[in-house]
Image 1 (spheres, helix red, strand yellow):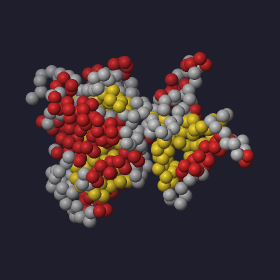
Image 2: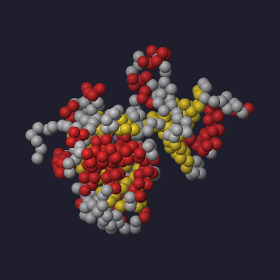
Image 3: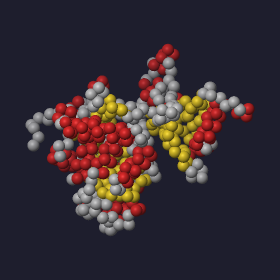
Image 4: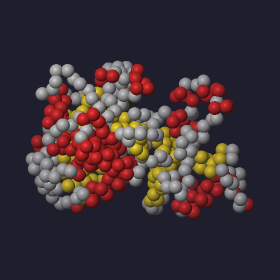
Length: 461
Ligand code: MN
Ligand code: MN
């Protein structure tokens, strides 16, 4: 039974000693995961490795699936779906948790390398919603792949280790920035100026022509990776902050890291499904791609590849028949595992305190997101919200119901509506974050652990 009046309290006020040990240990493991994977490709490949170590096998390794079997499918190295087959028929519905592995960043342009003055630059096109000024004058790393015309794939990671160079984007010194500082924040940095410094040293060979600095970089790239300038055309190289995930604060209660939107939900839901043995309802965990740019493309949630995965589960459990997939979705439940905007006291005016996710107060549920009158939001049904409340309360999960900012101040979107459109009951449920989409995002270790417990509970009910 709830008390008459809703009382809000920091999770830390109620934590017992052994629970605190678990919270801190879990956060250490989370930070270690982040420090081994920064891009969607790296997250998927590391998560696949972890899944295999924990008894999951890829879909094509099974000819038949039986209750208790653990199976996964990797879609083009950028999204991944996992399942533990339940004892009940999937026809009665499945439990899905969906997070996204992509994060805002700067992508190298198809022809990125230029020389301007005495510098060689990699030109970029930003990916997702960023505040451009945050990406200048910080250490950056380059991660990704270059695929040569013959199909050979070269994996690149530069700027993470102490013995590797880092990269950066220059910004104007304050002494000469009078005009820039008078501009609107959104216009102070031009998108075309998000150019990463690649080098400053001219090639000294006789035939190097005009662009000697660019030429020198090309020679180095050829030596290191065996590539020519044309090979950039078939590459996916992502510029990300070179920071490591670290414990934040004297009280060590927080995590600071790049890409916690939405890798914090990827990690916590991954850890949750690893715990699931012989569930009643089939447990499905998915890590999608392209969420930050609208979930399009064949690795984004809007693609039908996820439906194909579920169809294959129906095939291999030998229950499939025409239109069964639609019925499965209509009977299914989902937590759209995506981060929430935590209330920031320095910018309190954008939040309605009573309806804001507070850092350290447990996992945030967003019944709806959207902007300008909930537009674009799937808005979870009250019956479903009651079900989630019930299972969280029964399992002592600390949660809060929040919305993303004050009315008409802004809004957001997640993958929730995509599954809701198929008939699934969906609610957004994730960790509140400060400085979302910034190069360094902040979360609470308490909330991270709450997410892990919440997702585990969801799979078991
Ligand atoms: Mn997100
Ligand atoms: Mn986001």
